[in-house]
Image 1 (cartoon, rainbow, N blue to C red):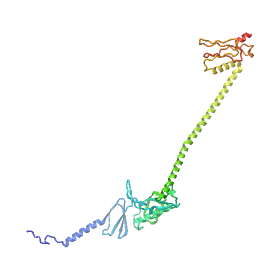
Image 2 (image 1 turned 30 degrees about the vertical axis):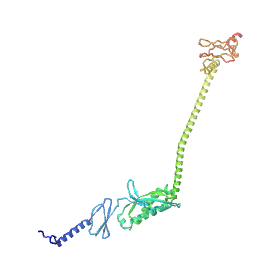
Image 3 (image 1 turned 60 degrees about the vertical axis):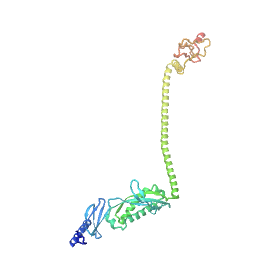
Image 4 (image 1 turned 30 degrees about the horizontal axis):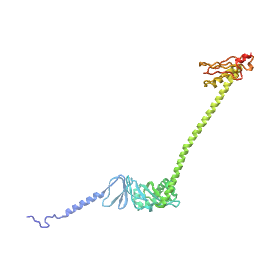
Length: 367
């Protein structure tokens, strides 16, 4: 039978075993409290009995165990952010925001005594881990208070339309400069990299509705001005081009007319010289040329002397050239017989001397 008497199956804890267990626990505590790890984006500040001892960079480091030395890792290589007027609960491609009311941070008074709701963020980087830990008791509250005071001052110096429009970038730039100066004077050990204004709107209600109407009217005015400038830029160059074209055409026409006039003068002078050498020949030639130009395109036209009374000129019925009546010389040429001439061959037409000349038949009868 098995003896089941209480106490006989339990090994008693001896002092040696207890010392071994205590030693193992102390060794584990010693192991975990003697080393610490600093991340790649951090910097550690080591304190010895609460007093600053040293600063170490990324990696595995040793420290005196049992709380003699303590380390505080500070994210000096990260960009940190503070939000004003809103809170982001889950950042991402589609961020989600808190529904709580933070209007106490964002409601401000502008320089023209209008109330406006300004939301903004600041991004900063810790540049001095030791100053960050020891110079200010509450770092985050100090950062937020200074940022709020700077933005309130800049918004209060401008009108509501300047804050929304033209002066927005200047507020961001000046706000960053002023915050860095104040943080440096406080010895906070940070540097502001970005100040970004987010939503800037009047408070919700009738004020916001009226402001949106005014803003829409301003946008419509700007749009119409831009459309007018666009139409002006299209019409003026086109009108200038048309005017220049008209001027060029007028100048070309003037040159053409001058050249034609000079040509006519030169041709007249040439004819005049020939006329002075042989007036009768030139006169007759000019006479025939004139009739040739006048009746160049005339078909089926017969020219007869209006002074013909005793003779009826017969037109050739066979399609040949009609018989031309020889013109009689004028009174000034009665002593000298005029040369007989035939009109230039034109289709079914006869050319004669001017009406004041008599026909050859009349002249012969009179002789």
